[in-house]
Length: 322
Image (tube, rainbow, N blue to C red; front, side, top):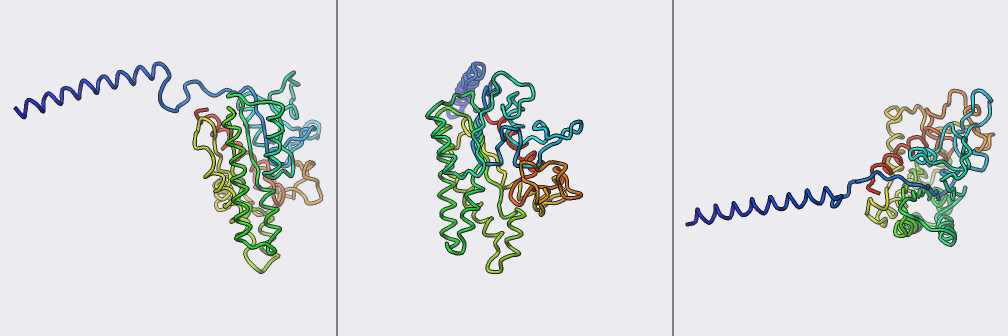
């Protein structure tokens, strides 16, 4: 009798299992279930918020190492693209600030402003909402916080490390709130952590100039506090937000530069007497190149650094189930 009951139970489980598989197959056929992309994400517009790392000026100049046309000797914004340019191009989009084909309606909206801190980005987003809205075909990029960390660092030692780290956390949380607001308003966001500011040439110089504490370690602590607070508060939904870990990548490059194709991660490539918007491949220190140096200035990424960030962002935007 016991054997009969066991056999009947086994048969029933097989029947139910088959029905469940059939149901799942039906869902798959209809595009239901799972989080993978059924149709690849194809944005029709890219909107960029942030600071100078994401900025292109009206003349097509960037806060990095600008490319020079070998035929004319003039700056060419299509060369040495910054990360948002590369991300836009991967979807066939362009910014009007760098539109070699003079499209009637370029799909890039540049809202990044040099010198911006988190509060400025929040204000820019408020202003955008006052005049427009987001759709699920909008790709929004956000990178900010470096100017916040610089501002906080300069308050030391008048302000204690603990107080400054607490404020860095607050600002990281505030940026996450901005990102979440855009995501819940139907935008699809690619947001990057800020680079570890303790790895910059500026940090190295500050460490040498001050004997009180390890100033580069303080800049790293402030950066980490900001990034961690932001990551914790972001909506954990890949359909809305894609996170790029620039901080971890910069740390990896700093430790193992050769593995990433860099020869110098400690010095700026641009000559100090050249304004950054005019820094080009023709105005670098002897032996420096945009690809081999990580930093353009004491605080800004080179074209090679921008290319690394672009690779991360493109991968994230194309692989997330937006």
